[in-house]
Length: 306
Image 1 (cartoon, rainbow, N blue to C red):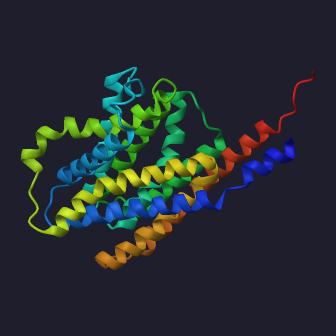
Image 2: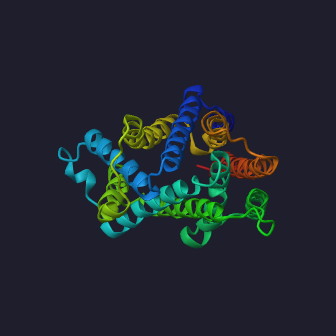
Image 3: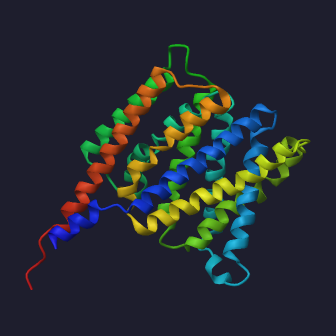
């Protein structure tokens, strides 16, 4: 039993790795499209709303709530709405950050999210981390400081937005963990897309605009597809491999972000951004390694005598 448990934990299907890698590419297309649309004069709140409107339409078509209404019943509609708005806030802050930051900068700061979730899971969920993982959190924070360099004239509003996006996403994940035992997966997917569309619709007259080019229409419509398809790829990956096993491969998204940033916008991250990203990734990988060790220790524990 001990040997098979270790083998099962270590074996990660190639298909799952490719799915995670493809999801990273899809999310990179989403951010690149949003950054381009913002540079063309579209307001980030409108871009974010279009992203969720497309996502909501796709979720409605594929989940078909009219056939199985019970799957979409919710234990707490206010919590569902709050969770959806946290995801919207994360997207909106990210799009605002992309107005002034490079793609690689925003994703590098976003990589700090697993460490923040590790820190928040203790007081909010009772999932306390040990000193080793807390040390990894501190090291990851140092990586964020390397990228933003506060006090050296580099830290700007874009970094504030990027940190806001990362923190909003962390609370969204915490709420997902908290609600996961009482809500169906279908309701969590559906309401996270629908809530921002409905609640932010009154702001459309202020931030909305009608595109006058087919390229703008195509990019705005594609946002929802990129968001929904990226999450679908991750769901398929997690069906055949554990979250811990796949976590390291999510960091490969920075490869796509650097490439697209250079090809589309002529941006290339400086040595500080790359160095900070490496520190954050290293600390995140250590947390993954530590959680895997704890899981192996638990599964390898001797069975009680019969």
